[in-house]
Length: 461
Image 1 (cartoon, rainbow, N blue to C red):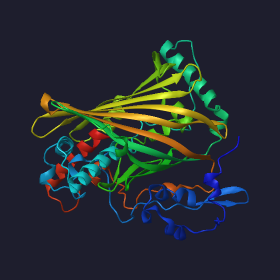
Image 2 (tube, rainbow, N blue to C red; image 1 turned 180 degrees about the vertical axis):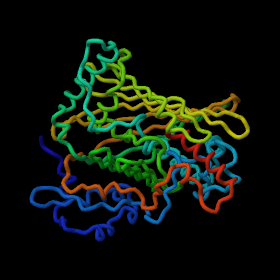
Image 3 (cartoon, one colour; image 1 turned 135 degrees about the vertical axis):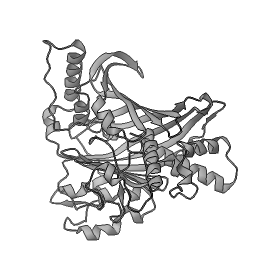
């Protein structure tokens, strides 16, 4: 198959002997364009002797920054006007930050400053929820698929195993996928907050020009390592996994680890990593059929086990359920739609209970072969964030959308090493609970830190 030359043609003339120190001169942190900021992955690929080599890419996290082991996701209470961390008093009420964001949506002032502040908060919410969500459970791409078994096996399970075998064959075959040791993908995306609904009012964004545009790069390597970076609207979100822990970095929260077991990046399941996708649904059950966008599909449903839910819960935040459904085309055998929903319950100190339900619906399109592997080159996600509790007037529903296209894909890139997936240097080796005890802080601030982590878990876990 003829491969795109736009990506690799830019690599000619670069030497594979360039040192990691020298590569810092092209760090995305020093560039202004979103796509230029993401070009470190390409600029560190060098052409020598017909092959492409990777010098060690600089992980764009300040090594002196503390890696706070809180939970995944943005903190709506710390998204103030100044973009810094909120004071202790500002964080006392659960969900107050998102409440202020909602008020801003309903009463936007025409001033330039107010518009800029609203746009900044919109972007933080978009990146926090949609930037780098994780899959429900831990799976390893090296795990073999279960053998098709009919005897003494429920029909829902055996049907799911057969569907996954068809999916693996349609995606390029197990032998070819097992030969892939690492992968690289680069794409463009658009994000927008399309609708906000409260108990008394609904605001819809009908202006597509307000969408935030940017790009992303994704590196993956066996076993279970990945690194993703998104640059959208002047902000960058980075996340990674070295096979032992998952970490995440945002400009407004800094770096923190994800609670619970190591899990794959959900973006990889969106048509970029067929082998991990098949492993993810290995324990799923076939629950029926459905027509999706004019295509008849089988539905495979995966429910997160109680042990994993408990491991992902922390403090006042309890993950009640996390369900992943995959829709596999009966015609092509490929995955064409993913539905992902998780529900979190937060018990505040005052006794009020707040629930957060986050639902992702992603459609995968434009499947094309890349070195024999079928890759979805475009897609669209609709995310609904629903906050509800005992008081009906406090319910809010926010609808966000993302469209993406894949520009470049490469497999088995020589030179990609473990150093490319190193987390920030100040990671503490103790338990999460111990690491969350900040030295010199009074007890009250530590309690508020637990509430902060609960809100973070509710928005993205």
